[in-house]
Image 1 (cartoon, helix red, strand yellow):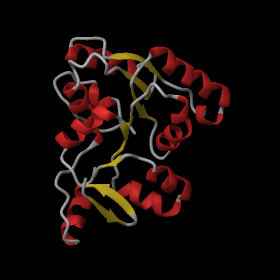
Image 2: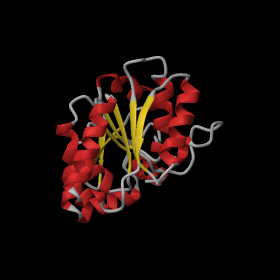
Image 3: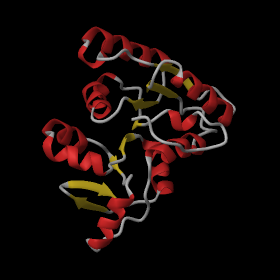
Length: 203
């Protein structure tokens, strides 16, 4: 897959359909925007975590303009709020694809679960959890979350905690989730309106 570098961050230059096909084999997906690129320049831990992603696709029209200026235009702006609904619709009939939603205020994840499952006409989202504030500093709470994800047998984990918390959490605990094939940073509010695939991201 072709890539280009902007501010020392390698971005995959692909279409959303190409990415969706590739995710059959799993991977970590991040959608860098201008805020991410600025934060990556001064947060070395965030930068290191970002390098571990399997796919980094452009979620910024500004970065699209920059890529044209650099002479290597990005083929498609792929926002997380559009990509995640496209993913669950693409794999709607694949019974091996099941999703756990982690993040968002109390009740948002459950409404997102109901909306997704209604759209795909099956129990694709198997569980959700809204962690308490500061949970990432609580080792016991993180372990409980890991056990809950394992128990759900989900093959996809969508994490909506805000950057860079969500990326750092995925990096830290991915080795403890061997059953999860695909990891997303994803907002959940984009899924709440049943007649739309996208809205503003939560995280």
